[in-house]
Length: 411
Ligand code: SF4
Image (cartoon, protein in one colour):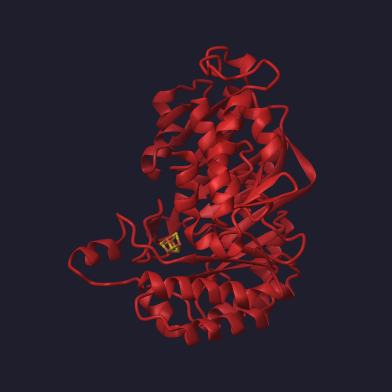
């Protein structure tokens, strides 16, 4: 099974906290950019599936992320879905998600067109239920816009909706967040993603933070806010990952595939891909691990990324070509077995279901498994980790310090 991520790197405006690969884009000034970019993504898809031998794969999930992919028309997004469907099988229960900015969801007609191309899930970037906070975050939409967008989506028959929220800004009070969570619960989305505000290099906030402007709250307040979120959402949602909550059977299958170390192909400017295949396809990788027993299924894992700049990306993939080489890539690496162990540990422990110990032993061998067991024991004694049904888990009340727990395991 394969997941496909499509990066649409254009936004109506660049938000000051954002360091994603996204660019403010004016469709009036550059009317043919959408058409050209869509054609390029389709070209890239055709090149990659041949070069990477993916013709027999079945697609489990497709995710349009960004940027703001909802600024593209249903026609363009539909062309990409059709191009994929022409070459690859779709799973019968395929999940196709579109990230949407509330400012771009405006009419029932638009949503009917989006539904008709096969989208099954919409992730709405609400970010806050307070207009002052939205203003601080530099968002173009108001709380009312977000409510209208949500209602339009429901009226159009979208029954799998995610809402994104941000918390942890400098003067945030617990009561304010409680108010926002009550507003969110009143809408009853199927899924909620809540991320702490972080000031990343490359964002406008980062530059201002260098001049001592403070944007984020203290660690103590952050912990209190995070705990508030967990308590408020616990009755309706299951927290299945550090930042993600879902009603039963509405977990994001696309994101779960990332955390489960499944294959994904990234298309578009700056998109990342991760592909692992049995080691016999690449005899040199995996053979270097001294503790790798013959009973396991060694994997060769490769990660690569496209160039970030849309103009450069479009120049590279503007023609259909059988030619494929690493010179097309911004970044490429073959993961060592140790790196794979680290990733498996880090990604598995993000999930509430935790790390499957049997799978770990099968993938990485007995000696690695014994090493892990040694490191795990004191952490279980200190209640940083718990063991349940052969799965190693970070208890939800410790999610807030998940990074430092994982560090102890992979050191
Ligand atoms: S936060 Fe989202 S909408 Fe804002 S600039 Fe970044 S990608 Fe675009």
